[in-house]
Length: 154
Image 1: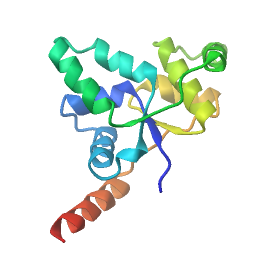
Image 2: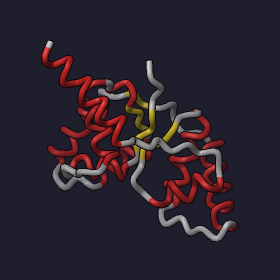
Image 3: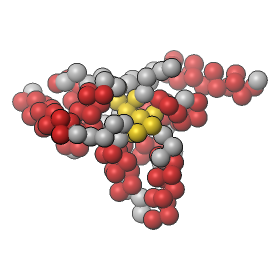
């Protein structure tokens, strides 16, 4: 079994808008073939639901998200680490545009999982912390697509 990956809001938004990024492709493959790899937390769910205009669409999205793995709830230590991450990045001369990204990163660090994101804040955070970013490669995506095609042909 492959380890779960905390999928950031940036990837979800790209995916929901029919994005063509490698991260969006990776999420689509996981949702179709290995949904247990997709990990959510309260921040990502809140950010996604906040962006939906119609209540009915929000309910549909929540029903989809509720089928996926939910990370352990955020705790005080996550909030404190988030502040330390923000300060460490600032000390390194890096500006984190969305402080909630520090909270998502802190949660991932505590849970010892990687993050799939297409947001430069996470790249900056990863230079100042032990955060691991999941980097889908063209080869890994091709292999996953080939595997999916073989399963469907059988």
